Length: 410
Length: 219
Image 1 (cartoon, helix red, strand yellow):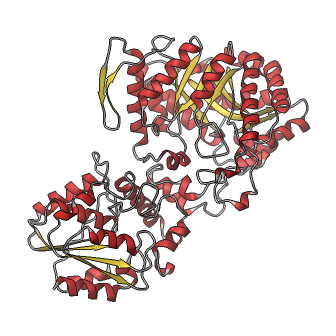
Image 2 (image 1 turned 60 degrees about the vertical axis):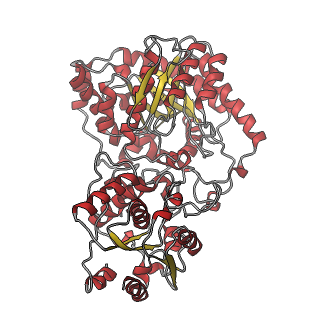
Image 3 (image 1 turned 90 degrees about the vertical axis):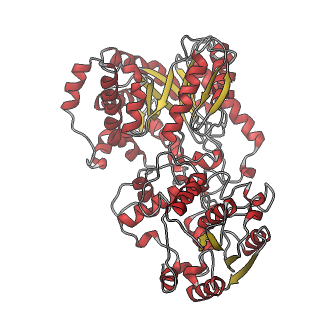
């Protein structure tokens, strides 16, 4: 299993959250102190550089108008890391190509990073979360169609080398496309796309790209990964290789349980702090009507709170993996088997107020004591054996999460 | 709507539903308000309308103004109610409230003189709520960018050569009465009436006053 270290580059020094409506979109940037910001930006780059030294791969993402992620242009940081790192693959997950108005510019930026890093780029494309809509001012209706249209244009810009071509699509237009540089990797850098629904998973599988799932946890992971695997099989007649699937989770490894719990609580800032106003969480056109209607209605009585920030809840859902090296390995192994297997772990290992030293301590334990065992685990992957394992473990949907929690938090 | 029933006592009232609203689908090729304008041009031809009063509310007023600016030959009069569609101010002016970027409570507050008249999702069953959500999707599709207006419309409104009445809720804070005045000033044969104790939907909040202004103008 390849492991990709990431942090969202948070700016956590915020006023009391009762004092603002939403951490996303409209929190005034007077609360951002650029002097402190400079310290943080440098710390985050140092953390990624350390991940490279410890043999981990690197992942970056971007958000806009939010202190949860003060990296609004991930390609810039990726360009810095292309120089500062030596070995790590450099994953951007991803370029919000539905919201960015110039796919050609994305193709150019990515080609530059690929060449500069001598072929270490892994290029993700994402639709983006709902609270990205207001900052981008991009109407999200038919977002999936827009994503694939921009994708098709970028792929051709990377792979067409015989002078200008034109693209006159429904949403994007370019008449003399002939990018310089072209990518270092041939025919193009590996492509990743995030998957949030069964339909989107099948579309990623049809193109043989890596399908990445964020924090879907036990309740959703089978539906998404199975859709990918089925889509892959239908399109190509083969089982999807393990390295086509990725799962992103919050991970903290401690020397002992107490230290691990303390670290995981710090990482849960990411979930706890995400106070989003309804108008930004549910912009018109982003969600299908039935989902939008549910969001307008709010949770029904007795419905579980998806953003429940308690560690035991998040552990039981498979959104957080935390504990001693043995515990983290066992938790990941259990989830990996339950999910049917994946080849990439996107490891969120820093969030909120977690310091450089705390981050590095966990990263070091992971690299030394968990990572080798994960690599062994995935090396044994056999689709048929996995199917047997899976059929022996029923879906957890509907299971009382509190029971699972006690199983994992020990 | 009650005011439409009142009008129906004297007129044949055609009350079309924009695709995407009230549970209807959005056609595959629809991207923005232009698609709606041309759909209505087709509908008007299909119905062979003559000597008709064209009336529109809010986004529908924008549509009515666009249609009338193309050609008024099938219409006798135009009524625009708390309409959007133009951009009288500069780039930094918030001429039209950003209804997609404010909380549901704030949306109610700026849209209604009497907030208890606002549709309340808490009182809706699942089907009504899904239609409410679908209406928002269609509303966003038709109005997202340029937001609630066509930058070219102000250069075309001079083509409207039929008597035009603008009816505005005095308390409308989505598009304030001063916005209505800017709209009025772009249409030559026009006048504007302001209805007290009403917000963005004067026909709902003050149906009597609304119908009186409408009928007085229509005759």
